[in-house]
Figure 1 (cartoon, rainbow, N blue to C red):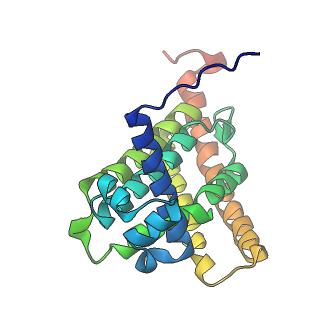
Figure 2: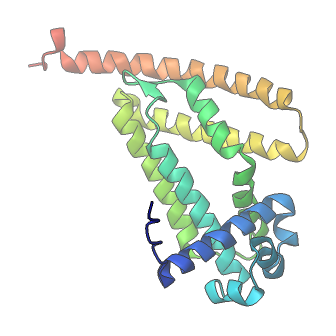
Length: 224
């Protein structure tokens, strides 16, 4: 049996692969040793490359770090747009939503984003505009996702704010990993959060259902 010829990698392929190696290495080190301990030298070593190779792709540490940020934020964004089981029949499934967000923001890999944002907080001028642009884009995608999957009636603003509050609470809980390691601790608080968010959502959703029913008129016909 003849072995098919191997496809030769192009220079662009090799360049993309090297950048991915460096991004992965930086992400690993941000989680393992944090922003303060990360240097371009130890990132290059972790990736199995020379420091010169790293600087060829990322001339500065900040350029590398914000590329890592953008890469991870893009992954979060793409994954969220693919979620279809977080809502059914026009209603949010709050327990699944909380668990999904915890899976994303409570994941150790996401810690790399915290390290970058917290580590550069005193050097705001070093942050490219792309960081705030990316945050705005993610917020907009969440809003469009809600419009597509959830019946919100006149409570659109309140339901979106409830989604944002859920995220704020999840992110805050994830920072508790600095002080707590027991999974039972996080499980208790996730259950409490689910109960609180569910109760608030049910009130808003019930009101939205009434609004939609009135707007549709009897038997689904538009009101005259």
